[in-house]
View 1 (cartoon, protein in one colour):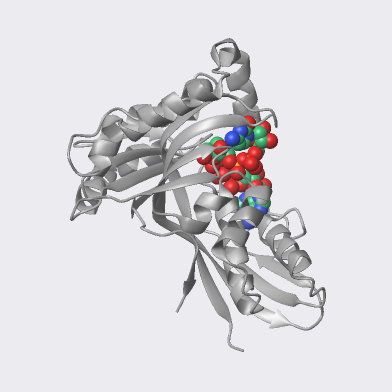
View 2 (cartoon, helix red, strand yellow):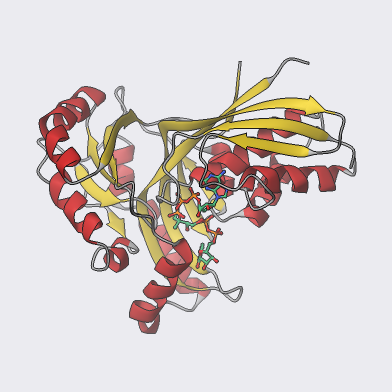
Length: 311
Ligand SMILES: C[C@@](CO)(OP(=O)(O)O)[C@H](O)COP(=O)(O)OP(=O)(O)OC[C@H]1O[C@@H](n2ccc(N)nc2=O)[C@H](O)[C@@H]1O
Ligand SMILES: Nc1ncnc2c1ncn2[C@@H]1O[C@H](COP(=O)(O)OP(=O)(O)O)[C@@H](O)[C@H]1O
């Protein structure tokens, strides 16, 4: 069988609202997530040795069961009952690690989709979503991708669609020397705001309904200008991480940006533009300053899908 290739797009958060605490200790969230055209790729080859071996071009990433690609493969094989299944996997990373872009989650989602196909297991989408939710809160989104309302821990999805002929584009910044621990960010949020967390399901539902009718959804539907973006973890991370403050200040200097925010638990930062040309112009105008402050920067478009098999 020829090698199978899978694309694993990154995501940004267009809205991240922390509602309160759940009985399982995770946070109840109301989010809008968007797949972007910055993606890792996985190449899969079947083996008969019962091993899942991973090669990766980033030395700082483990290639054992702590890598979400291997973890996803082991879960899929265990659920299938065919313990002799094996695969050789080559992971090509382009998404910055620990950046708030769900690179790991997206790789796990790509492994679920790719190995389900490679091994001919026939697991349905709902079964893959259930495995993804056990592997990480952002992984179910990474299976479907596109534009989604995400509730619960992040695994309850409601698909949205950009209703504009020309989807927005973004300028993305990340400082290579900085990463933010997601557990730390949520823990800090609880320290700072825990006394004001909502508790009742009725209050959670009221916030979900408010988000479904928020101006952001109007902008996504193509009728209305972009509102300021909300990310409750940005309010936690920004005071503690200087490069986040610097990056936000630089992005706010760009001409014609629609909005500026941190993605997820950071430290990635992005500015939205009406189209890729405007993002590229802004990138060219400030490239020297980004470099001076040590930022890596990308221009990319939105993507209407998540992890997907490449032809
Ligand atoms: C912050 C967000 C926003 O999209 O993404 P990233 O910034 O990581 O990309 C997500 O909530 C991250 O999702 P993910 O990275 O899959 O989190 P998980 O592995 O499930 O959980 C890591 C830790 O984050 C905290 N966590 C995560 C999700 C959630 N709804 N409540 C939480 O409190 C918990 O401390 C948990 O132990
Ligand atoms: N294939 C992978 N790619 C990236 N990170 C991975 C992978 N497997 C496990 N991880 C771990 O998952 C953590 C979160 O990874 P990632 O999803 O890139 O972060 P974020 O969601 O903040 O962008 C990292 O600290 C990393 O060590």
